[in-house]
Image (cartoon, one colour):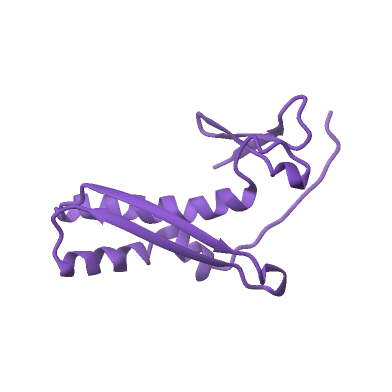
Length: 135
């Protein structure tokens, strides 16, 4: 899969992000030299974790017939030690529905195994970068 980004015309740093047929903007705050037109790359990284957890729980609940009505997900980040090698994310899922304690525990276990959580914590990611002149 390919994700394409291009600087938004007339903007200092803002990027138009194309993922399949979806368009979104990514930028940085005014304090960082951007215009805050969209979430920062860090925000998108954090949001990927939160959305993956929610989608994984909803998918699993539907598959298993667990009566989940709604999920509200919050992701808190602590980048105070990022330059030392530790970036902390904390997620909180508030799940509504007529759930037993056992079902809530089961959904907690499922949330902890979402693919993005695994990608962020157990997979070695290899990145290559090439830079070339545009035509």
